[in-house]
Image (cartoon, rainbow, N blue to C red):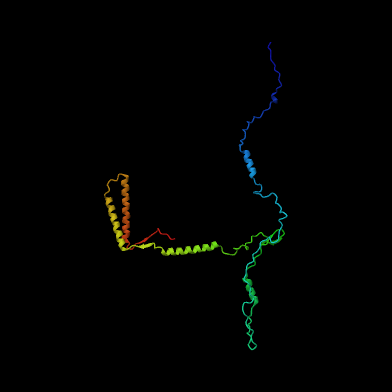
Length: 262
C-alpha cells in the first residue's frame, strides 16, 4: 500500500492576472548650483512695464489741469512800418487851368472773372479728423496732432549744407576744367628721323637674335633647349612683324592708354 502526500492550498490559476512590466526609474534631473542666484537676478532686473506699458493708464493728477497760454505760440514777424503819406500830392489846379480829363477804360468784368477762375489754383481741403463714427469732424492743425514747424527760426530758409555743397561743386568743376586745359594730348606723332632710328634698332636686334638662333645645336633633346629655341623663334617673328609695320606705314602716331580722364 502506497502513501500519497496531498498538499492543500488556496491558489487558483484562473485568478492569476498579468502584471505590467515595471518601468525603470528615471535618472535624477540636473540642477545647476547657480539656479537660485539666476532666479534672484532675473526677478530683480525684470521690468513689468518695459514692453506692454502700464496695465491701467494712470489718470492725470489734479494739479495737471490745462492752463492758459500752454499751447504753441506763433512768433510775430517784424514788418516794415506802413507810411500813409508816401510823397507830395499834386497841387490844386487853378481856376483858369483846365482840369486833366480822365479817360475811362471800358472793362468787360465778365471775361476778366472767367480768366481769373480758369487761371486760379484749385482750393485745397483743410485737413480734418473724425472722432466719432457718425462724422464729428474737427480741425487737424489746431488739435495738436500735427507738428508745427513755423515757430522754428530756420523755417523757410535754405540749409547751410546745401549752399556749402553748391560751392564745392562749383570749385570742383573749375578745377576739372583747368586740369583738362593743362592735360597733354594723348596722341603723339613720330618724326621721320625717329622712325629711321627705330627701324635700324629693330634690324640690329633681329640680326643678334638670328645669330643666336643659328648658333643653337642641331639636336634639341632636352627641355631647356626646346624652350630656348621656341623663345627665340617667337622673338624673331615679333621683330619681323614690327619691321614690316614700320616700313609699310610712313606716318606713325603713338597713343598712350595709361592716362585717364580726371
